[in-house]
Image (cartoon, rainbow, N blue to C red):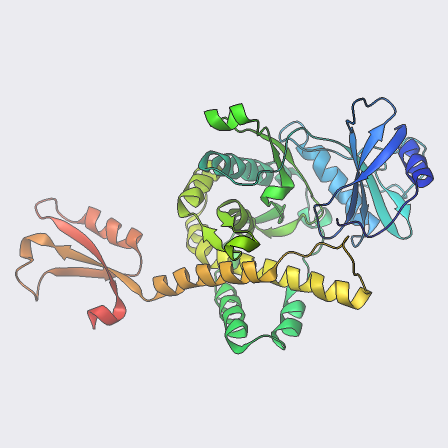
Amino acid sequence: MSVYTQLTNDQFAAFCQRFGVSFARAIPITQGIKNSNWFIQTTDDVDGAHSYVFTLFEERPPEDIEKMAVILNQLDGKLPVAAPLALIDGEGLDRDKNSGDKRYVIHYDNKAITLVPCLAGSHPQQTTQAMCHEIGAALAMLHETLQVLQPAEEYGVPLYPWSEVRDREMQFMPGDEAKLMSDIWQSYSELPLATLPKGLCHLDMFADNTLWNLSLNNIQKGEERLTGLLDFTEVSVEHYVMDIAITINDFCTTWGDAEQGESVNFDRSKMVAFLQGYESKRQLGEDEKRALPVMLAKAAVIFWLLRLNVIHYNRTEGRTGDNIMVKNPDLMKRLAAYHWAHVEKAQTTVFVLLNSDLISHKDTQIVGIFSNITQAEQARDRLSNSSHFDIKEYMLDQLA
């Protein structure tokens, strides 16, 4: 289980009292790789139920967690989120313009503690197209709702310096892995980043950070419903399409277990469903659509580096034992390679517009050559309806 800081029952009771909650028992939560988390049973809970989640943030400073509380209160009522409880004892951080008259964070050993209500539901082991559609719509709603918090940079935490982790880790990688990472990073840097819309983004919307009503009856009827969005510690100002790519990478991938060789199976039909859900709330721009394939690869690289960084951090801090959970970085490496193969294929693929009325005349059957299917379709639509046109896909070396 991922619990790094140990607390006594007396400490739990004292902390919970400051939030106005009567403590009975703390139950460690095994998911997560960065923070220490417990379910809190109160004296009013019965039959082993628990009403709250107690989190001790191992890395993020308390001022970042205060910003997170403001963000969650902004989303509350529009999306299923658990907003941190306010302290009732008048102690805590100094007041600032973000937190107003309320304080949401306890300081303990230079770390932040919050208490939030439990949300109903469970983490999905697998996703469906319907779930991908719904989480896409939820992410778009998140992007739209948080636009009112301005300037956004005052609410989001700084982006992690992943380029520093990249430079450190590439020194120890096999040549093919280092080249994969370098190629993806270079392609990302060549995107028209200045034209891509930005705002406050979740940046960690994996399935295990969501809750659903996954009763057998709901699953059989295809009526799974989103009941909770979790872990807003990484909210930062970033391109919306990066947040989309991060979420697609997990929701649209089936991760095989160790007995299956820890395979990576990406489902493009789920990605289509996700994008349809997203665009039901917020339309993507053409630059965002063109950037998405590279963003999918870059997002996988970021989480590849994140997992390598956790291993590095655990090693340097001397963290060992059964209570440390580390996710396999190779899975994200394989997903990055999958997406990059599609990017490379697109870079070497052209779409040829052919006049089927002139198919027997080799010199005149080609009407135009285009780099993507959209351009070819637009050209076909502009041409006269008196002729018939076909679009065929070729590799560049085939044309040669």
